[in-house]
Image (cartoon, rainbow, N blue to C red; front, side, top):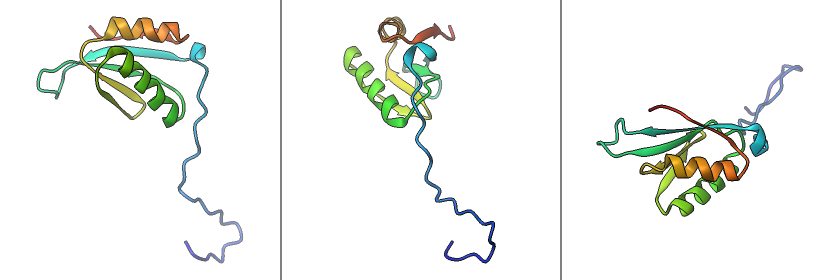
Length: 104
């Protein structure tokens, strides 16, 4: 948009506002195991994180390093390669998150 004759027009830049990260004790995370569309390989998913993308990436980095495996972040979901449900639940609870096991 370069110019508008409408006096009530409000320009939106398209830049998303940063989400504020909710304190860990106020967040409820769900840890589940998934192997669909992954050629039979298991991955552990951590869902339900509320906060900025930078904070979720930092949390994912910390979890990956403590488990000694790879992973990624997409759509506020942390993906950890392998079945690490029990270890992730204990690590997240140590940080103050409310964690619930989801799925089978």
